[in-house]
Structures are given as C-alpha cells and as structure tokens.
Length: 287
Image 1: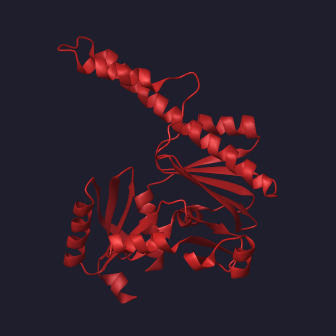
Image 2 (image 1 turned 90 degrees about the vertical axis):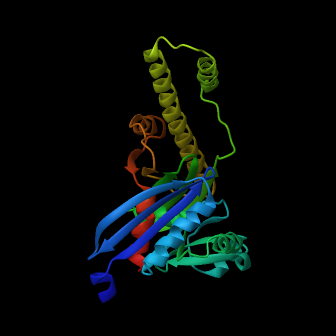
Image 3 (image 1 turned 30 degrees about the horizontal axis):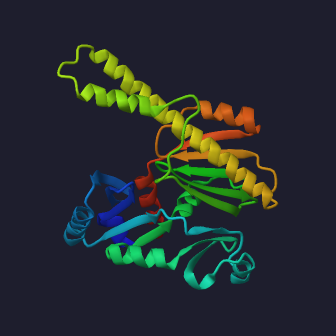
C-alpha cells in the first residue's frame, strides 16, 4: 500500500479507567515511529477535542480503544450452535472468529454506546483481543492481564482459547493480611494539620511503605484471581495447566513467580506492557 509506505499515518489509542482517560498518539512512516506523545485527561470533552483536532489536521488517522466491561468473553468455537449450547444469547452480542478455531464476543449494547459516545473511533477491541495478540504460548497456558485492578484471564489449550473470566474491582476494597493501609492514610491526614514538619525523611519512608503495600496488594489480587480462574476452569472439566503468564501495565515484583511455583507448582512469567502501545500495534496489523 503506497499510502502506508510513503505518507505519515497517525494512530491514536485511548482507554478509560477509574474516571480518567489515557491516550497515545503515534506517527508512523515507512513502518517506523517518527513521533509519539502521551496525554491524560479527566474531562471526556477535552479528550474528544484533542482527537478531533488531530483528525482535522491529519485525515489519515486511525483511532482505537478497548472495552473494559464484564459483558464479554471467549468461546472455543465460532459456531453459533456452540454459543446456544453454552446458553449465550447470540442476538445481543457481536462475535469475532479467530483463525476459525475460537471466538471473542461482547455486548452489542456496550459497543453501540461506546460508538455513540465516541463517533471518531475506527477500532474497538475486546480486552481479550489484547491478551490474544500478546499470547505466544497457547498450549495449556493461563494468561492474566492486569490493568489497574481490572483483571482478565484466558486459558489456552492446543492453540484454542477454552475459558475466560473477568474480575473488575473498581468499586471493591480488599484487605491485605496483617497490614492496614488506613493507618498510613490517617498518618497523612495528621501531617496535613501540622504547621511545621521537621523530619522530611520520615515522610519519605511512609510514602515508600505505602507504595510497597500497594504493590503487595496488586500481587495479592493477581494471585487470588489466578487461583480462582484455575479452580473455575478445572470445575468446568478443564485439563491440567502447565504455565501462567502475568501481563501487567504496572511493575510487578518477581516474588509472585516464586509464590506461584511454591503454591501452585507451575512455572510462570511476567510480561510488562504499555497498553496504549499494544492497542496501536493491533491497529497497525489491521490497517
């Protein structure tokens, strides 16, 4: 395609989580990134304006996003009859077949609402498409994707997606054993009432401890959801799993790999990603 080869093409990816919008704008020429920039928005109208301005200036622009809702999943077939056998209402979903082997589905309502909200979108991907794009080992493997307390899992066997699950913890609060984050939050409130702070080093130590607890909280949730997905998969008659892949948009401590091996007797691997870059990469394959 000459246009793709000689003229700059603009790719915009964005997603929203916890009432905040994240965006990446990449400019591609001759299959190379010649410019890129990231933006964050708390106001949806500002996000729309930003994207529309780019489209007005550069008509050769592709805009992509992902669905972060619970009304989506995978089925180990592309047959509508299999969907019916699994009691999945096919009239209210959009089905995308992958290599004539398995399929993703998502709510038509969610898709239409997103298209109404953002008329400028070219591609909308289910969250499982991100996992599938990154999955290189699809043999007796479980993948879990973590996006700031939104978790999605897929189990593969013989290059076919057999099982999926979503855990959305946006409105949930989970306790960590033997630790109380509230104590640090109260300490922060007390500091705000002081007129003079003499020991700055102590404040830094508290912030570091809070950050450590936040990491531990995330790893605890990841491990909990891995166990729950495996349990549910086995309850549905799934075969033995050999490896677990943790895909994360934030840094994860390698200690979770030891925990998985010690507790679940499985090998595991962490795959760190930039979600916005990944969304754009998927779109580049589709253009």
